Image (tube, rainbow, N blue to C red; front, side, top):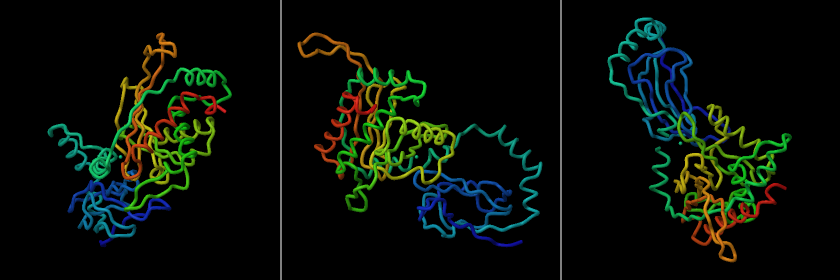
Length: 329
């Protein structure tokens, strides 16, 4: 029998601190080797920390919701082989099954849901949001996309890929828009990294597409598709999240006209994208012309982007999508 300490682990090269999201095991309870003993969040990724050996949790030093540096003592446990067998034996399994049959059905929010909820609540409270909206005419864009996708040698391109590329090139061409607010400072970011809001079984996750400003359309389509797939399969690393000035949140598949989104903490803006609508608009002579439009809403952090800069960002993205030939070059 021995007393051991559980330390805040270092889960990535850039990790300096972590937040305790949940203690699945209560003080005084036994656990088996491999059981999840604590859930730690860093840069929007929740990590389940498994026990390396069986024992009993004696004391918790860092409560849920508290952030501490790497190496800090989180808890103490007692290693006990006899308790290991008791905790994992058939009697324990039978008791758990009986409880499952007799207790009311309540689903505790998932780890990512608790965390991707706390962060957004803080963001809405602490970031001064304002919103800008417009419609983007995508007839020419969709025609070129169909032409691109007809070539089987090229990676398939979606509207999300084209929106990401338009955002990336806008920030490359306007470095003053690629900045964030950090500890009372305006910070100009060295690379153009863009978040992608991804709906998963574990809730909304925002992986970040690194160096998007240096990619052509084919590279961006392949890289972002891999990133989204890893987000949905739970295979993101800590280096896949955090950073960037803006996130793209495309909800077009859910039949919504406009979507005003909450800015991810640490960023300065998020672009919410709605479904494509077909409407008649007057042409230059006043005659009705059928248009294919997508409604977009840019949520801005007023500490970083004033109205003029926010409108510049939105207009540049719209112009790149409405005159789309350079995106396919």
